[in-house]
Length: 255
Image (cartoon, rainbow, N blue to C red; front, side, top):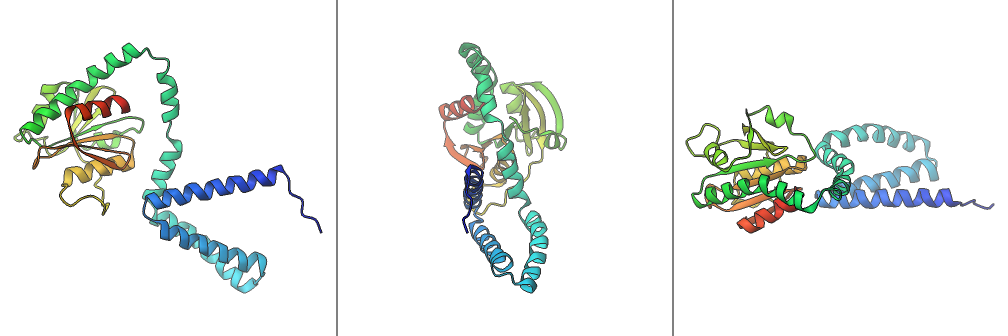
């Protein structure tokens, strides 16, 4: 008995292999690799029992577990699934393609006009150890976060940023949201990350910055009230102890 094997079968196998590889890499990055291995082992045993050995009773029991297990996985890993779907739907390549049609001189002028007030405000606040948390919206809308604070809707201005985060200001404890080159709101509440890998010396502002960077493509800038150091949380990663040049370079590249 000959087994027919065509181009469609090869493409099918290749697609499954790619899917398994990216799922494995995603699980490894989110520190749930052991769970992935456990699920994969269960699926292999289920296929072996139900398809190869054709054990009807055991196969029926495993079928029930698979039906319930799918819902359990969605509940247990809703944050990871949301992050995965966001990664799939991210349109950074299209943004890069569009940027090719913008003149370099015009792009640099726009960037500096929006970036330099933020950089200078962060440097001044770092010098006086004035705590600050600035979130810059990119592709993912932050309307739900904006609604938790007070609407500002003003042009990006260095003095305004420093006044909002002044220690006696009623809005200094929350986060500032910047969207489309405007300060949308201040005093906003961010989701706090419970990642155990965050160094203990980093405070609540850093955990909030990490939380929003894990749930969106936003850039979160933190000025530490204790040390005066500037940090950036982006794509679920920290960049710590930044200078003015480092901060300007990151914002220019990412925005």
